[in-house]
Length: 103
Image (cartoon, rainbow, N blue to C red; front, side, top):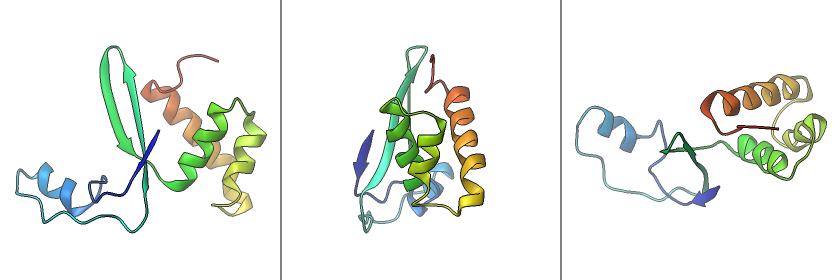
């Protein structure tokens, strides 16, 4: 996982212009570093930016923490009643995209 100060984050004017085959606007750095996720699936490289809560949850998972501990990592980002659903959604998305390949 990387954290970069860049304006090239999904759903920003740069990506929107590129998706329409238009020239991107002048580059601007983000106010703070943006966490990025890079992984490989079936010899294909993938990458995308992450939200801060996803980065915190992924860091917890990479440390080998259990579901409860991953939820605890999300406590700084979300209201308590939203944490379990967010954690489960992230784990499902990671499994679907090939980031998690085994337990």
